[in-house]
Length: 134
Image 1: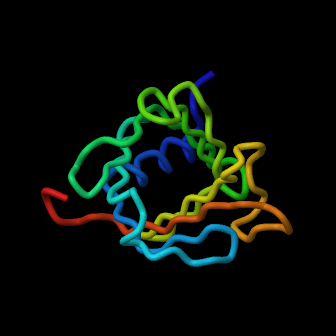
Image 2: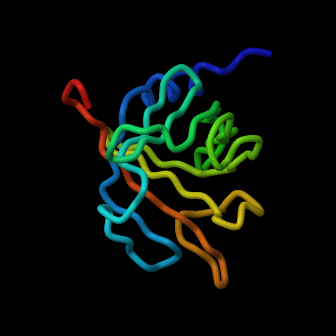
């Protein structure tokens, strides 16, 4: 069975390079400059996470579902520390802002962007990179 039109449209909206703007672990804000992630590239169902030297930290496949709320993104690592692992995230996209949230323990997909008690969520907001090269 093929993807529905809303999921295909969401995939097209996600295509591009994204630069982190804010990050939180649980309720604590992390300085963006301390993140290993300097850029998230999404294209045609593939993702790459790059550091400040443009070295690929992690890469793999991703899929989204636009038929559920919150929107979901599954990331299956192919190379890097998450190779062979699946991260189940939720996402929000608003214009050129993308927020990705997942449980650092990897036990289950978060139900919301706000952590429950004893839940260790990583939430990173990104801005679409509009300059070339990014």
